[in-house]
Image (tube, rainbow over all chains, first blue to last red; front, side, top):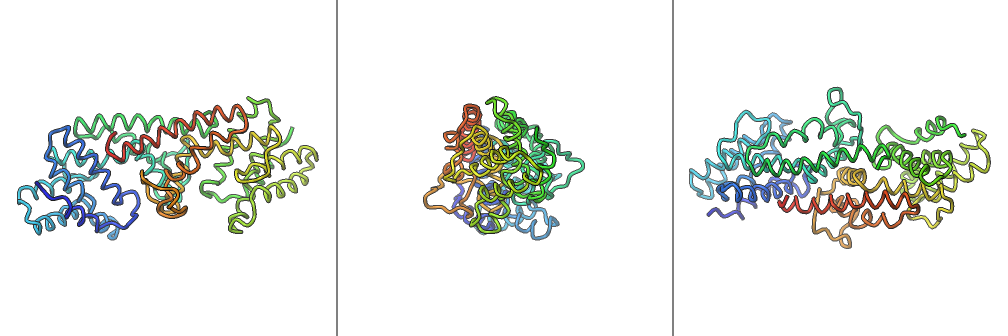
Length: 212
Length: 212
């Protein structure tokens, strides 16, 4: 059984008190979700928990390098070195490292193990549902975007501009995430969160038109 | 019948392209809501529409004066002078000016007319429901607050800090707005929007705990 306390403490040190929509609180939510899915899917809870805690420790470097450094690959490397220092079994380290390296949506590295699929799903689930809605509007506030534009055209509007609304993010990305899930439990949770999010944005359009 | 185009153009000039949660889009939403309520309540549509368009034109001055200037009183003054320049009937001007002066939540000036009560309700309605949720998270993003803290204590946390989350605003203010409505139509809309908002934050707490 892995001791999670030192792993959490190490991972926590990579985040400011409040570091926005991929901050430490995102990690804690992904951990809670990943553990829940791991139990339902009969996965290794140690590997899932450790990789959830460590999955975004490469983000700071990715931001500092303006995206040149991939946070998944770099985070996996950091995690491997750290876990060696804890004298964790070589095999367990390899399984954790694979989860971290393969959790990124845009990566070509595919999650090959049940534990890696669980981390992937838990990470994406945190972008949808009520949490996803909150994160999308918070991000819009951080970049100075408008609250809403029901007629936004994702093709002709730019990210990080005042057109980068929560609704644009929903149209471009969030509403499709449910189709990318890799585990049965992830699919079930995503379907339900996604339906809530669909209803929210439909309602937002009605309210903005003065119809509700 | 009042011509609204010059009034809209004048009011619009007080707002930047994107001026946050009390920006021009808030005014357009309040206008749509106020007109809908005005029809249902049999109110004067001209007075309601003009006062909705003009209700926040004093905000810029209130911000610039760090709150020393009250946007409702100052906006009413500006609006009166402007409407005189359009040669609007003295009586109509007085009715519009009263709506604007009395729309502020914290003001001691109470809305005395049906039209003033409608503007008051429409303005508050824009803080609840899906729009209110979006505005609350957007504001949190603008001030660099956390996404969520289910255990936030409003009594010991401060506005404009990282603790000034959307959930804090909901606990302190938004969930009570439905009880402040002054028209039957406003009450009906507020009740429905508020129920949706209650469900959203309950869901958010469940999701953050990994339970949904």
